[in-house]
Image 1 (cartoon, one colour):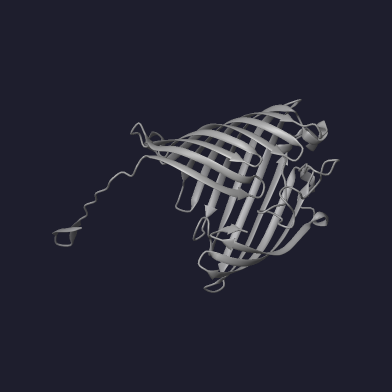
Image 2 (cartoon, rainbow, N blue to C red):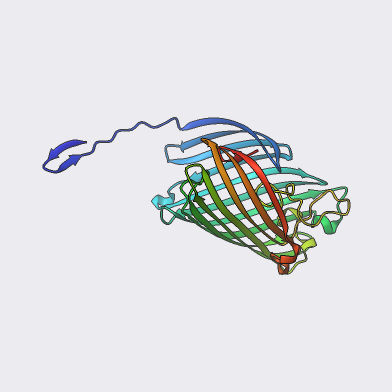
Length: 315
């Protein structure tokens, strides 16, 4: 800043563009996908337009995925951002395999610093294969989907990943159609919420919950297995392995999912050193084979356990 008059400052700003092209390599482990190894090539100022293009290739314990994404942070000079892309995924889980090609577009806008709105559209084509599951357990062997939805997020947390204080609420609705052995429509809704309260410099308490439901005139056996809702795992009722809360296939190896799911949790954590915590948590949840069984009090499952958390992750 330079003084240019009585009570006036001239603020002069200079900058230099960072490297617009990046190549990233990453790896890790996820409780459902298993080991993960991937790479991403990104150009964040494609043709000097301010738009970004990204190519990502990822291998997992359950298969792999390749995607090409294009994004515009200020479409037509507005406050709306647009991201669209295509992907191809292979997925092997328990007793079935799936191959999916997808196109997905997201139009989003930050209405305020704390409130974000999104509109989402997607089209997928899918092929399923199994030598074990019955048609009723798997759902249609080949199907396409087309859907559109809206999401509204209120985020008043002090940090989007390592929250210590504040609250957040997310509301989402999606409608679409499935063209498989038969044509069917669906409407899916989701509500998520979280509340974080520091008790001292090192102690923190939090409450969270998520409820999801799919409304469709079809029976659950007519819905593709990977479009059904599941419960159990690291982000739900943690006394169950991933997806394994609820009905299983006749051979007992494949979770079959349902059309209604809910989970609530409470957590008390202590920060031993920076970004390293121990926690005691309690979870409760349910999974129903149809929407009428949403959060049945007589079918709840519970978990009380402890965890070690490093930099926001869980071990």
